[in-house]
Amino acid sequence: MIYYMSATGNSLHAARKIAAALGEAAPVSMTAAGPNAVCDDDVIGFVFPVFAWGPPNMVEDFVASLKITNKGAYIFAIVTCGMSIGCCLTNIDALLKTKGGALSYGDKLRMVANYIPMYDVKTETADAILQKADVRLEEIIEDIKARRVNRLKKGMPWWRAMHKMSAQYKEADKDYSVSEACVGCGTCAKVCPARNIHLQDGHPTFTHNCEHCLACIHWCPNKAINYKNNTQTKRRYHHPEVKVEELV
Image (cartoon, rainbow, N blue to C red):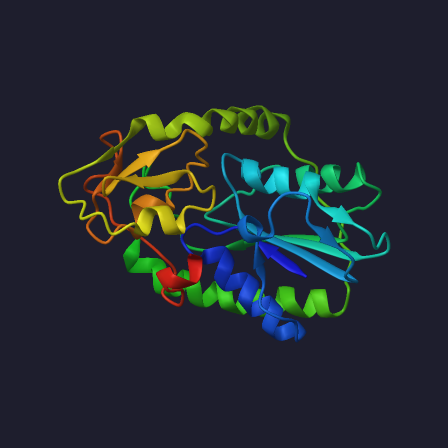
């Protein structure tokens, strides 16, 4: 079983590639699996992006509530990122150890960075980055097939301190705005992995359970959703091999 959380499609693309190579069924989103899911598989994988030097809040919550009945399972985690993955792997390993498991293998997969509140998407280098990512992903897949076990790097103390700030993301949507360009198509609500967006009278409303993953911003067809005054002129991004319907 491979569980994923994805906003712009990077992690979904990676999860699908891994599942196909292992001959497994399509990966399952953590949103669809829901809390207290039960898994008895021999191989269990988690694929997700890094947020604020650590796992997204909903990923930590999912792993913490997941009931793993096969204590001898081979468990891996792949983190998609623009640069550093901070304490992602060590945090997931610590959560697994509370339930008698452990992370057998963990690695990062560099893909196109897209946190546009801080920087613009480098579209001129995106194709080259994604090509390298697919090559690296093949190497990761071979490791997983061979049931390789690796040693996780200890996180820097400041990573954990910075990641604790991600708890504030739940109300980050207070700084989101919706312009008159919105046509009420509902794409934002459909792609939100936290199910934080609802349409009210054809207008998106946010319920303050935000992951600040920016899926709503990146996938809005009219660029109607923005964060503060930081994203209006920035390029939007989603993985070219992932369609919006696949994230619904």
